[in-house]
Length: 340
Ligand code: A3P
Image (cartoon, rainbow, N blue to C red; front, side, top):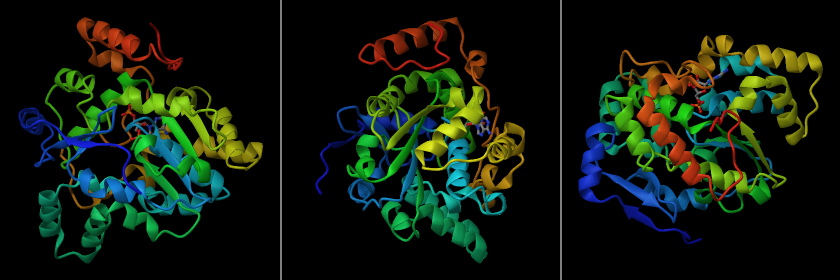
């Protein structure tokens, strides 16, 4: 199937400016479709294969803009669907149980080579490198059913049969919190990089100039489809406020009816403190091959609603209010923590 959207290179001067900050990218960026989704150059080579991935009826996808509570939701979904098999969950990395579809587009060929060179004498580590760079479609084609797949791509760039064939849980988070969180993750990832100060990053983000942005378009796409029977729309803030209710909602959506005891045990397993100490969800593949920048916040970081306030000065707060108002005029989407 041909792609129904255009992929355009980000103009050279702007790309060069951004690559000074996003140091993991060395070839530039693309903007995709009418909303101009911002992605690394490498996406171009995989766009069609991703769009044409055959979807299976028992697939379960968790789709989010990065740092919206993806891992938290993946673990919840996986455990509900796998009859609360905590043993396997604790001993098998989430990346193996619930892989990140398009991760390889983030690994620039030059960094791929550096990864290979740095890890060539250790077969275990080399295996991790090979997993990290496996093209998206190939990665999921080999998975046994039922497949659990994570993606940060907006729904419009995923296979068009997805919603009519499989189940999708979409998680959204107040963009200000997601931005702070993504800023930290970008600093942690050697394959990504971020400006030194959050303000510079934020100013790029509201122009849609960061991976998987524009964030509000990403969320609005899913919000518009929230009544589709195969899409469940969840807010990070709901998970944070009332986890048992969200567990029950997701269970019902997945055709499961957990007991009170199972829900209680799952809440315990998913609590921030337990999650933070759980190496199956908090240890990234890149950490295992020492490919993370030192001295940065860990993957499971603070887990707070509203932590963005510590990062915004008055000017940024007003700018954020205006940006949210302008971008939410064409929708009734409102974030639970929205206080305008
Ligand atoms: P912070 O950086 O604000 O702490 P994702 O999995 O989409 O990358 O999202 C990561 C964000 O979810 C991080 O936010 C992380 O700390 C938070 N998170 C992960 N597990 C959590 C949990 N069990 N409880 C609360 N927040 C959690």
